[in-house]
Amino acid sequence: MVWYALGSILLPVLGSALILFIPERHVKKVSQFFSFLAFICGLLLLITFATTSNSFTQDLLTISGINLFGVTIDTLSVLVNFMVVFIGWLICTYSAGYMNTGNREHPVKEGIPRFYAFMLLFIGSMSGLVFSSTLLGLLFFFEMTGLCSWNLIGFYGDQKSRRSALWAIILTHFASLGLYVAAAYVFINTGSFSVAALSKLTETGKIVAFIGILIASWGKSAQLPLHPWLPRAMVAPTPVSAYLHAASMVKVGVYIFARTVLEAGSVPQVIGEIGVIMAVVTMVYGFVMYFPQDDMKKLLAYSTIAQLSYIFLAVSLSIYGSKMAFDGAVAHIFNHAFAKGLFFLVAGALAYTTGTRRLSMLKGILKKTPVIGLGYIAAAMAITGVPPFNGFFSKFMIILAGFEIGIHHPLVLVLMIVIMIESVGSFIWILKWMGVNVLGAPSDAVANAAAPPLPIKFVLSVLIIMTLISQYIVFLLLS
Image 1: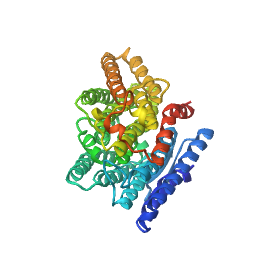
Image 2 (image 1 turned 45 degrees about the vertical axis):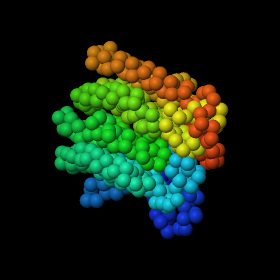
Image 3 (image 1 turned 30 degrees about the vertical axis):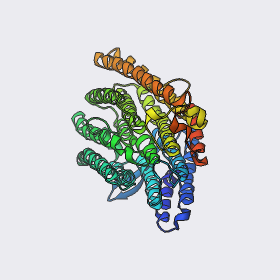
Image 4 (image 1 turned 90 degrees about the horizontal axis):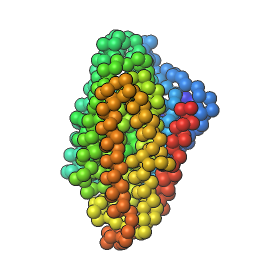
């Protein structure tokens, strides 16, 4: 299984390097090939792990008795890696139809090799972070994902894109200082960089380390007060928004928090209290910011901020001793990636075919372009938690766990009531826009839309299916 994990990491990196030396006409096919190989590695690892349930950690790079890098194979890493490489392959495939001169919103005439090189490098870096068994490994790949996102957010090269990319790299790098402090503190007190060394710290030591980890996690996953970079990053090409800012990069923070809580044994309850409070505050902020948005991607950005708060909430609740909350967090990391990735790619398909992302200009999508319309419906239902779509199952686990804990903790109970109000409000708001955009006679922009390319229709169709079945993959591994 270690070789499958290493294949998920190294094959996209190899493809990224190869793209720098081949003719541009071959770049799209090469990127799809190497991302597909990474997906196969992730799929084989998932199947093998499901049949053996053999969790373990293996050291790979040790100097002077200090483990610098190793891999951890368990339910959390296997599931999240599968999501990373699967959606990574789909994004490379989608981009083959999106990144061209036929794009009505942003015709792409240059920069294709750079785009795919950094996209593949990001896939490999994300897999490296997911499997890393050491804090040094987490740090290294944390910074690598930041480098890739900086370049991809600023892909178009105009002043707004460059400024947005700068916001992203500054805020996430500032947040990473928390992880630097945590890694140094753990090493000084335990002599090890292993994530599992967190379990050797005193209660006070764990509080110090986890405050640093939370700061890093909040920055990468766009939580208050380190969130401003994410809405600004919507200037990036939509495949970038779908992968980095819905499925992958923003999951770095919640993944690191989940991984460290899992490895640390008992975590001081004060960390759970801080996590729960900040998650609910951020969730409410994200919901309030829905209302002024007319740009579809901006609306989805704030929705992502709110949905990530559900995952922070669930991991924080698990500190109170709830296994259901932790399982809900893992399930929501997985399910949200497919649902929100689909939603962003629907926005990209609309922008590609109509030339606009303005919600007020989009009507009658289902009649004009059925695949995009069905994708819109599936994504909206999954994000808002409507059965039988995947978001329902993970959100239900999180909310149920919260109310179970709230019986004994009044603060949690009050916050869970706030969350229920936010959940209903989000459903109403997104349902309102779905009715406006999808149903009825096409508006002028939609009536004059071009036909979406085959790669775009293929990827949307796959993701529609995943919003209906991804929860069963999670349940298979969690059972």
